[in-house]
Structure formats: structure tokens, C-alpha cells
Image 1: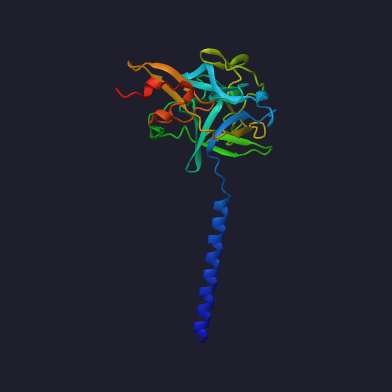
Image 2: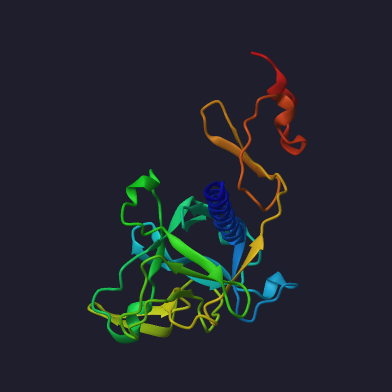
Amino acid sequence: MKQNVQTYRHLRSLLLLLMMVVGVSKMYAQETPDYSGTYFIANGNSYSSTNAANNFYLVPATNANYATDQPHLTTTKSGQVLNCCWQIVKNGDYYRIIHVADGKYLTANPAMDGTSGNDVGRLRVHLQEFADIAADTDGNTLFNIVLNSKGGYNIRHKDMSDIVNKSATTYLDPAGGNVDGTNLTSGRTASTSNGKVNVGGGIGYWTDEAAARWQFEAVPQNNTYTYNIVDRQGNIAIKYTTGADQRAAKALSSYTDIPEAIRSPYLNERR
């Protein structure tokens, strides 16, 4: 009888221990945040939560490409527009960040050929189109997102490190000078094997966690659609957008689906 009581107590202790382990595991699982969503991404330095017109938003650069149709990134005073709208999608322990306007992925790239010293951190990301994201076998589109110590968020590529300062933790760094416009400027240059390259305003990476902060502004879900009205030859005759946010498209399954502002009575005729 005594042995049965001891066996019972032993089993009860094991059961309580198992319940504690399961409880702690659930607690940590619940604390893991998910930052998935659609956002306007802004430089977190000198950021205003009440005046979007004064903020510098993440956009493609117009005069710097990693390769053809693969622009590097900069920040500019664009306001909350489609060009600075990004979709963040969780993928395992990482995230993919997609430029909503064209569906291209934020993608890490090697340092510019011939750069050395601090220049290796310049222009280390670009936008790239993938017909099938499974083609990114190296994980160049996978990024970590964590809270910044001064508010906002840090973004870093899963494998990005700083070979100059021997640091394994580096972050995508907003342009410190906040130069307006989408062209990279000569305000800062990088020395490469092909000479000096303008990188002023460009997005690279650096070791300063506090300064490398971004703000995510949730995009209002206003059910905005873009409609292309085509003529009989298939050419676009009218392009109509119901608002600034063009993230979604809706099939015109009935005559009343067409916005009244561009609806023609002739479209409802059966031929």
C-alpha cells in the first residue's frame, strides 16, 4: 500500500511538472508578436505621429539600381501614398516585405564591388521581382523585425553583419540627413572599383540600433479599387481609382460594380 502511495505521488509530481512546462511554453508563444500587415513605413528619426507631411517615407530610389528594374531604396517626404506602402508577411521566424505598388520584394544584396571600410554598408537592399518566391533559395528576402529601444522598429536581414566593426547585429539604417526627393545625392559617396557612387539618402545598414528605427503606420482599410475600362480593341480607355490606396482589385461581375462616376448606360446593353 505504501508503495502505491509513493507511486501515485511520483506520478502526480511528474504531471504537475509537465503542466508547468506546457504553461510556460504557451506563455512564451503568446508573447511572440506578429508584425504582419500593410503599412506606410517612415524614418523613425524626427518622426511626427500627427503630421505625415513632415515625415520621410521609405520608397524606391529613382536613380540607383542594383540591376535593371531593381531599384535601391531611399526616404522622401511623399506623404502617405501608394509608393511608400508596404506589405509585411510573416514567414516562419522571419518576414518578407513587399512593395505594394509593384509587388517587388525587399531584397538584400552584397556590398558594391570594390567598396571597403564603412562603404560596405551602403545600398545593401533593393527591390526585386520574383515570379515564384521559392526561387529565393538563399533567403535574401527574409528579414527580422524587432522593437527599437527608443520606439518604433528595427529591420535587419537575417544574415546581415558588419565586417568593418566585427558586429553580427546590424540594421537597415534610414538616411541620417533626411534628404528630400527620390534621387540619391552626392551629399555622401561611396568609393567603388568603378569610381565614386552617389549614395546620399540611400538605405544601407549600420550598427546603431537606436538610430536605425522605423515607424509602421497602418494603412486604412478603405476598400479602394482601381478599374480599367477598355475599348473593343482591348486598349485602356479610362483608368479610375476610388482613392489613394490601390492595394485591391475587384472583378466587374455586374453593371452596378462599375463606379457611377464612370458608368456608361451603353455598358449595360446586351449585344
